[in-house]
Image 1 (cartoon, one colour):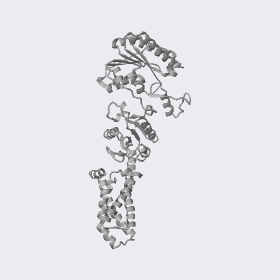
Image 2: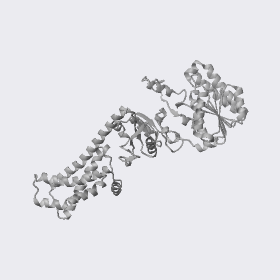
Image 3: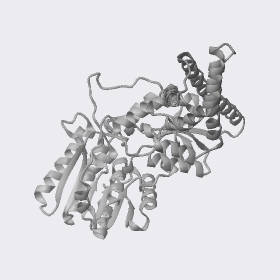
Amino acid sequence: MENRQSRTFRHLTPRKAFLIAFDAASTVITALLALLLIYEGSIPQHFWSQFKGTWYFFVLIGIIVFPLFGFYTQMWAFARGGQYLILVAGTTAHLFITVLVLQLIKQSFTLPTYILFWFLLTGAVTAIRLLYRFYRSHRMVKRAKRRTKGNRKIRVMVVGAGAAGSQLIVELKTTQSQRIPVCAVDDNVLTHYYRNNGVPVLGDRYDIEKLAVDMHIDEIIVAIPSASSKTIRNILEICHRTDCRVRILPFFTELDSGIVHLSDVRDIRIDDLLGREAVEYDMEKVSGFIRDKTVLVTGGGGSIGSELARQIASFEPALLILYDVYENGVYELQQDLLERHGRRLNLKVLIGSVRDCRRVEQMFNEYVPDVVFHAAAHKHVPLMEESPGEAVKNNIYGTYNVAMTAARFGVPRFVLISTDKAVKPTNAMGASKRLCEVVILTLGKIWKDTSFAAVRFGNVLGSSGSVIPLFEKQIRNRRPVTVTHPKVERYFMTIPEESSL
């Protein structure tokens, strides 16, 4: 309580000074008014003399007690019912202390006078704050209307008032952005009704819907990168009940550093809604597998291959080789990796097909990789049903070509990225991937110097050929989401999880 009082007078603003003066004056005026009402305008001489000799006690007690109850540290422009109870508690404490002091100095008024005084004082301190709230609300509405006529700024609510949220608020306020932070929310009640870098923290996640309407919010940014998946899902569910655009700051594991930038904010992705906590692995063991090694990733421009490349790049390989037939995808990945790692990463991008024996052999001869991740493959089940020959040539022959070349050059480790559709395959793509597994298992028995392994994955969120893009398109076009069978349960993993595994 001492902290509240010292904070009140240490950070004295014109608004606080006005409230302190008003409340102090109210203690005297309401006491006098109570006497006038009780005695119908004619105060007995005895009580009038007592009042003239004790009125300053009402003021002093108010100046001491009211700050202790947080009368001047609340943000009354955005106050709700719970905060007005503070006023009731403060005036009640004022009444009891006043009665006690007057009794000690042998001065006293009647019980009805005290009760009426309490009602009038509570009404006065509450009324001035309600008037201030209505005034501020009216001003904000007028400002919002003026902005709609001109170059209107995007009004942003930040969810999270911790370190990341604070950095984001500063970024929004200091950069030449069309976005302006209007308010924040946080589940930590200790942050409520204080300003975070000038932006008021007005409640917790359950206030988002109401604040979005009251504060004319256009966009909500969720800035809690350390939160659990369950918490994020719950917050996103609440946010999507509003008419606001919802964006998110990625998890700390996705950020390049602990510093938050406005450019890190992105739209909601399907993997943000993953129904479980992300699986984490012992990356120290993984780093020994990669560091100071020459690593080749075939199909490096694809969804799985590109994420493999990103994670491999973070483990400081001696050389990272990306090999892909599709130049656009691998070019975008190259730019991304160079932007993230710069000269620290020794990167080589090669264009070619895994079916081209001479090209593959030339690559192995020149760079002699230590580890090969074979991610190049055709993965779209319906398309491979129409063109099964391409599945055979690219998946089976391509795998044989790369694996055989790796064996002949004595590559220590070869990892095939396979699929759950290789289990009891019922389609051309699944059958081709099963035969890919047979190829490397057979080569592993023949070539002892190379360790061959295959890793099977199921539904990978966001990967090329995944069912998720189809679901997203159906939802976006307001069409029914088609499933194989009503009782089918699908289990998903993210691309980073898959690549880490």
